[in-house]
Length: 378
Length: 231
Image (cartoon, rainbow over all chains, first blue to last red):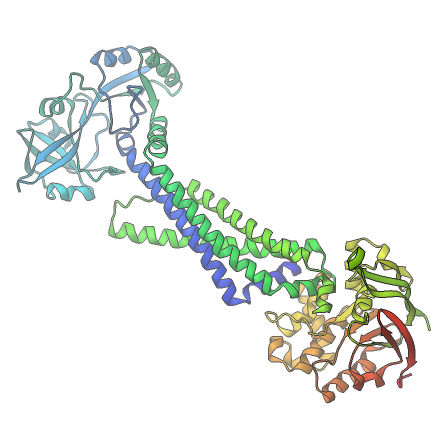
C-alpha cells in the first residue's frame, strides 16, 4: 500500500500547477475560517475582560444580566445574605458603571469605572506605576495602561481630570490581562468613591464577588443565592453566559457563522473544482491503471490520500498564514482581538476534512465509473 | 504447442431490444504459447472488443475465455484485476504513460500495484528499461521521449510483470515504418518466448510479416486464419 500511496503522491505533487491551485484553495479557506473564528474568540474573551481581570471565583448577579457591561444593581441586603451563607469565606460588592470625564484638554471621554471593595480591594489590577494604597486618597483613580489609554491623553501620575464635576487624579497606572471590547478606557477606584462621584441608581452594587471556603461549597452557595431570587455563577459560567449572549442574542455569532460558512464554501468550490479537474485530466490514466490491474479500492485509497494530503498541507499553510497575520496585526495593534484556540483549530480541521471528503467523493465516483475497456476504445 | 488462450463461443452485444448490437458473435479459437497471433479486420469488426474480453477487461455476454486453463470470467472482479496484473501485459495504442512520472516510475507501476516496495520496483523497472534500450532515459518524463521511445517504455511496463499473455493494441499506429519495424523486431526477438503468447490487433499491413498466424475478423465473426511469414 505504501508504494501505491507514493504513486498517488507523485501523481499529485508533480502536477505543480494543479497542486498549487488546490493548495491555494484550501489554504485560503482555512485562513478565512480560522481568522473568522479567532476574531470571534478574541471578541468573546474581550467581552469577558472584567470577569477575567477581577478574577473572582463566584459572581452574584441579577438573573437577567446578560453580559458584564449590563449589570442590574443589587439591593444591599443581598450582600449581607450572601455573606451569611455557609461556605462563603468572604463576599464584597463591586461597582461597575460608565461615566463621562472631562480631560485637561477640554475633551470629553466616556470611561468604564470599576469600584473595588474598600476593605479588600478584591480584583485590584497589577500596578506598573504608583502604589495601590494611593487608591484610598481623595479623588484617586488608577488608569489601565492599554491601547485605550491614549483616549485619556496618555495620563501620567498626577494627571487631573473632571468626573461629574469632581476632581479626579491619576495615582497609578495598571496592567490587566485582557482589555475591554468597546474601546473605552478603564478607571479603577474604590467602591465608596465610585458611588460618591458617579450619579447612581438607588441600588449601587453591580455584582457581589464571592470567595468560597472551598470549591465544594460553590454548588451550595449557588443554591442558596437562587433561593434569594438571584444567580451565582462561577467565573467560567459567567464567561459562558456572556459568550452565549454575544453568540445568540446580538447577531454577532450569526454573522461570524455566515462568514465562516462562506469561507468554507469558497474553499470547497476552489479545491473541489480543482481536484475534480485534476481527476478528469487523469481519468484515462486511472482507467489505464484499472486495465493494468489496480483494484477499485486501491484507486479509492489513492484519491483519498491525494485529497487528505492536500487538505492537511493546506490546513497547515492556512493556520500558519493566519497565525502570521494575527501576529503581525498584534505587533501593530497590541490589543487586536483574535485568539487561535484549540477549538478554532479543531473546527477548521474538521471543516477542511469535510472539504477533502466531498472533493474526493466527486473524484472517486468518476474514477470508479470509468471502464478499462474505454481505454482500448480511446 | 500448449494452448495459452481458449476462446469458446464468445459473444458480446451492446444495448437491448431494438438497439441490441452484436460486436462479437460466437467466436471460438485457440492461441498458443510461443505464438504471435495477429487479429486484423476493418474498423468495427470487433477486434478490440474481442481483445478486451480475452484480457479480462470487458465481460462477455456469453461464452468462455480460458487463459492457461482458467476460465477467467468465473473469477470475481478483484480476482480478475489480479489476473490482469499478473498474467497480462498491455501495450495500449496511445501508450497511456503518466506524464507526471519519470520513465522508470511508469515502468514500475505494475510492480507497485503488486505491492512490491518502491525501491525494489524502481530497480526492477530500470532493468527492463535497459532491456528496451532506454536505460539512459530513466529519469526523463515520457513526454520528453520520441514516439518510438514511448512505445518502448510501454513495452517495458507491459513486460515488467513477466506476463504469460501480451496484448498489443495497434502498436505501430503512430510510428513511422522504420520505427514500427524496429519495435516488432524487438517484440519477436526479445519478448516472445515459449512461455508467452502475444496477441496483436492492427490495421498496419507493414508488420504482418511478424505474425505466426493472422486471424481475420469481419462483422464480429472470424472469417479465417492465415499463416504468417514468421511461421
